[in-house]
Image (tube, rainbow, N blue to C red):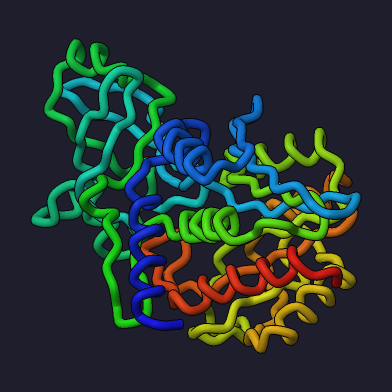
Length: 347
């Protein structure tokens, strides 16, 4: 893949990253996706669970879906305290020590308020609770707060309340380029949504009806995918995801995507995985195979609950998952190539 193509893919992911979408409050990215699909002239809609769905009619009977969740991890306001301080708790697999102190956005009902995720001063003795965080325990959500310097009246007027979502501030989320890699918060799973949009542009006449689903509320239990698969009969479901780079898994960084055989929710379908391996071989696309544990996807969760009979998870190797993530643009691009080949050929 040439550098111009990498640049285009980087720009597409950057645009998606900068559209906030904490689980359950995903309207910002919803508007963008619906507008983009409309520009492409593709039939698209949003269902009652918040999924954005595009349908590409196939030449034969049958239906498959490719999902990429559009929600991101973050925080949720537990309490609005005095002097503009907010207590927050995790939303999905977020950890305060990963974010560090810094700017966060509070997505109020009427206005977004900027706050500072705060851990307290370092120049303290054992009389202060922050001292323990320096020496013998990780920072937890119960130990931190968000400083807004707003009055209670100002927060109320902005619609800041228990349940308000918190995400990393946009200027901190903007991706950077490390040669052929992209580094950013929320590559999980905005980079996968970028793959969906590329498929929407490139797949014209698939073998069977192909649904491209930007699924909602995945980080809090695959809620959107479960609703979609409950209501739409499918022959197969392929989830797009990140894949954690770790010494415990035989996965290498680089241009080769990863096809999973198992995750924390169960096994994937061997027949469907075989078809995807065949599609990769036909296009000379490198492919890694892995079984991992601390992980789940739309496909494995839908299979576990009996909503689909055949599920697979295609992913790209990612460092620092659920943090400031780093992934090779070539692996993301090869996911596009593989899925285009699979949807267009009768494997």
